[in-house]
Image (tube, one colour):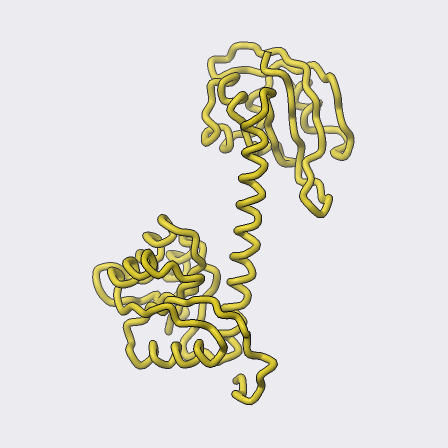
Length: 253
């Protein structure tokens, strides 16, 4: 257990945490630990309705959620409602190592679990890890939005896809050309938009680092009509230069 004199292990972060716990004594215990570690307790809740109202009004940086809340909605159902409205990491608190319960909880994509009783070190580690992961997720979402903005501002058709051919992004020009909504296209493989095996080979095979210009491809729209186009394929890279897939560009007409 973390000793109180060991200041090197105490975070100086002032992240704001909402504690959702229906056991008053446990709630007070958690609040004491959080305050000591340098976090700010944004507020507390003892049931689902309080948790929903306070998550909206307080906008905490993270939520510690008792998985077995009493009342009509437990912690998992409450978490589902919260994450449907806001991007906030949720850590479940539970006294039970129940596989069925954990399977239910997975659908909310929690940032961690704490099994009661937990010690100071476990609490600190799961909080710091969750906050770091959440910050990385925010950066990724922003980067994707930046890419999406660039793609949608182009007059060219642009599609990005990974090495398996799964479509990642599908701009507005592509939506108009194929008669497909972006939300639908992102569930498809690029192969489903191609007429022949030859076209699939050109799109998916070859050196992923190479730039392929002026390749002749025949696409198929949603009604099965041919769309012959000359395309350019370039590597799709992240900021570190790692290749994630390919960017396909062609004139809309």
